[in-house]
Image 1 (cartoon, rainbow, N blue to C red):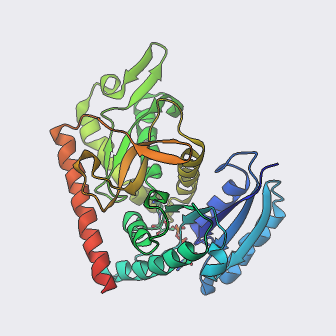
Image 2 (tube, protein in one colour):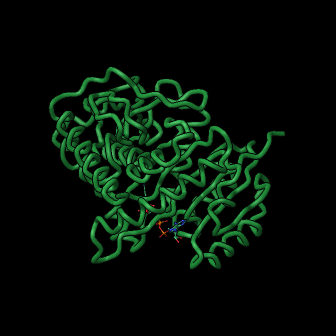
Length: 331
Ligand code: NAI
């Protein structure tokens, strides 16, 4: 039998946490043969709710779940973890300035970076979900210098999956037959959902989405804005954020990173830029990646036309500004 993997979920008493922890305990994230020990962190006002989640995990009698640590102590939460899914953060409330929200999250991610750096298992993989996801991940990276930079990522897989979903609906094909969309840049409304290289598996073989849609206008306008604004549309409909799909996509992100992407398929991950596609280095930026042996690598050599170039640059510019804002909160 395999040794259990310790998985940390911060903000575990929240919406996404509640959807995510049962998925992890059922093997959705790491496989149906991989035992897990869940570490759940939240803040003192949520301690009672967190304990309620722990009670439900016990009640669900998950065969793969070998233990649960539920705590408000970051050090206890981070100790020995192999995977850290950072969902906890300070939400933007009505009337708050961008800088005030950034400042709260910078201080959270700075201190949790230190707890992870000192107490997590060697080679711990980190996924930041909480917004501003890319910049929270960047702060975490800066304040956990001994964690390899390639181990720190942020979630844009939800946007990626949303893009697959939109194409599947538009073409009336199975979502599992659509692949290789790309989310470039920030997990925000400046992200660029790009279907230029996407394909659909059809009875007549693999076809480019561009050819099947036969309407560049839709791909260059409504497709992009629908994916960019999908989070807001869900909040409007549910009066709550997209917790189910965020949790499911977080599982996809970690599963593909650890177990590998299927041959010929790439996915989107927010990773530390190495300057690929002339994206400034030093940002956490979403790129198309493949994963193998627990490591991601950016797909190289894709053609970028002028339309795409502008959109890649625009979202990079926003990330540079967010980075400056985050740094101004540190001083
Ligand atoms: P929520 O408000 O229901 O839950 C957040 C939880 O974090 C709360 O239980 C809160 O007490 C906890 N928390 C706050 N500060 C903390 C700290 N310092 N340490 C540990 N826990 C802390 O929010 P929800 O809906 O679960 O969303 C969580 C985050 O994920 C938000 O920032 C949201 O914007 C983001 N999000 C990101 C997506 C993505 O694709 N990257 C998609 C959807 C949401």
